[in-house]
Image 1 (cartoon, rainbow, N blue to C red):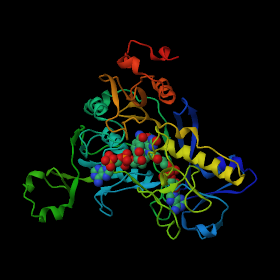
Image 2 (image 1 turned 30 degrees about the horizontal axis):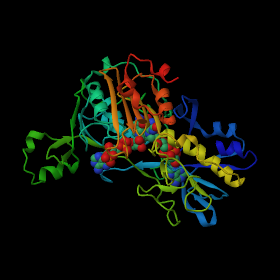
Image 3 (image 1 turned 120 degrees about the vertical axis):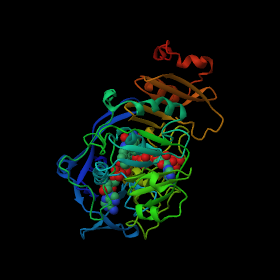
Image 4 (image 1 turned 60 degrees about the vertical axis):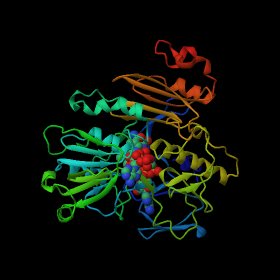
Length: 463
Ligand SMILES: Cc1cc2nc3c(=O)[nH]c(=O)nc-3n(C[C@H](O)[C@H](O)[C@H](O)COP(=O)(O)OP(=O)(O)OC[C@H]3O[C@@H](n4cnc5c(N)ncnc54)[C@H](O)[C@@H]3O)c2cc1C
Ligand SMILES: NC(=O)C1=CN([C@@H]2O[C@H](COP(=O)(O)OP(=O)(O)OC[C@H]3O[C@@H](n4cnc5c(N)ncnc54)[C@H](OP(=O)(O)O)[C@@H]3O)[C@@H](O)[C@H]2O)C=CC1
């Protein structure tokens, strides 16, 4: 959209493997860096009507020859470009490939497959301790969930053990008694039921906020059988029923019951289950269509981009989950593969492409100054700012925490008396003030613990 509006008389092509195009709507800048928006899937005609110079072509790219500036699509068309931006996202990094008992969740198709399998399940095992696992264990009903996490506390990619402690009781509350959802970015999925995947069957767009809204995530049991958490363990082995029964494992097999699959954890425990959800992160979508070029990849296999979102191939930019920020980041920003950052990177990459064509200078956008994310976990609004988990600070930091059970959890990270990060759970109303305190790096030493005193209106304090 940004390129099409900046170069109204040039042809812009959006090549996508998905039949529907995701668009950002109701964009709202909540504060300097925090933003809220909806993500909607729309037919490509909506976008083409808005930008007459934009053409949406629904066909997966099968080959890129960057030196020749050309792309080949699966529908047989060849495209010559002046500038190209790769936004091919990421795919689930599954525990094991091609195991029919292991599912990942990424797009509408995989979410529907999950729902179908869940509707016949009594027990599932969820592996991983990030965004998807947190959402699933809370949303699934009528099915026992065994949740195996590597860490000592839940949700390690998003918060610390204190926040986890605050959230855990929500898992025990009966779903009917849970409070109403709070406001957050809404993601709407295609209601026609049209699948998203392209010809390769693997290229649907990632789901986003509230993907589970409107999908019933229910197993076969009448009552919710709850979530059982196994801490500090990983998967040792996954057995099919036949493999398990034939194995020499020193365990009472009949006691474990008869299940389609069995998961052996590194703590020695074995659980029978209907299937396993591998919510173990993502890997950028770079193959096979980018092979044969000279792209520099980062350690996480993302396309490394510089501060102008340029890859190592000339005139090829990248944005979103597929890329890895290769510039020296601000002390308060880190990359996380999220909607917010995908939108910001796409918008900034387009501006960089335009600046390069027009030979104009461009500075790294302000949104990369401070990490910020608004989301929802266990029905609580969650705001993450800066080095919210004291990432990279070693021992050189101090934490201040305020917690009211069932209501709010506030944590700030200070280093040298200055605020560098915060986790805000619940309706704290502190995000804007804390964002300002982090951005202006004011010395807060003299306020000490008063900073989180609930009887002080902190907004007035620092006005
Ligand atoms: C279950 C789930 C829940 C999530 N919840 C949240 C959340 O609450 N908040 C949040 O901020 N983030 C969330 N995320 C993360 C967020 O969805 C991603 O960070 C975001 O979608 C990345 O956007 P992207 O455009 O880079 O990639 P994608 O959205 O994955 O889009 C990539 C596009 O590239 C296309 N494509 C791939 N290969 C090709 C090819 N060869 N040719 C043509 N087209 C191709 C695909 O069809 C797709 O349309 C969630 C992710 C998942 C899986
Ligand atoms: N509300 C939100 O903002 C949401 C965001 N998302 C995003 O969607 C994407 C996919 O989500 P998700 O898959 O949950 O990815 P995440 O990166 O959020 O979490 C992956 C989790 O799996 C763990 N893990 C990795 N490998 C293994 C393994 N072999 N065994 C056990 N655990 C392992 C990771 O631990 P470690 O970190 O120690 O490697 C981490 O806890 C992410 O980019 C995520 O940010 C998804 C849902 C909601």
